[in-house]
Length: 134
Image 1 (cartoon, rainbow, N blue to C red):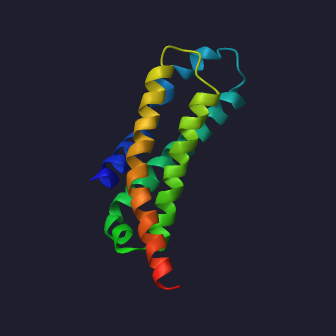
Image 2: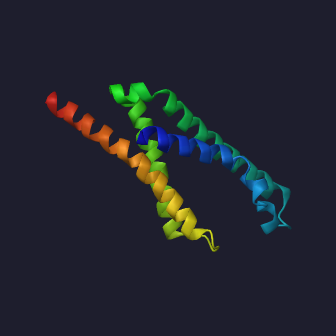
Image 3: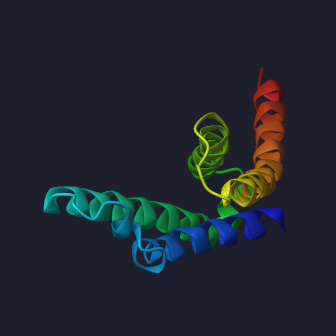
């Protein structure tokens, strides 16, 4: 269940991020920026959103393979868990200078924790399988 919840929240974060620049008026913070800056923000946000939502949805579709022991699917799941860990660490090391900071930290830490549960399960099963062959 944690697998599905974590990936669903991750996919939702990716999908909602497509609309973040407009919903939160990102460009109002840099009104005199050259057009290249706006374009670079759009490109990075679009690709981030596409990768986060796409990877999460693909992993949801491959749930049976992940629990059946597919090393490849588990590797991508571990990577996504690592991405959320990096997001938590980044939020701590370089905090947002707004009142959103506590909520962001709680939200990112929650998603990381939920995705960490299956990652730990997969790691234990993978190590147990590897030691059985030794």
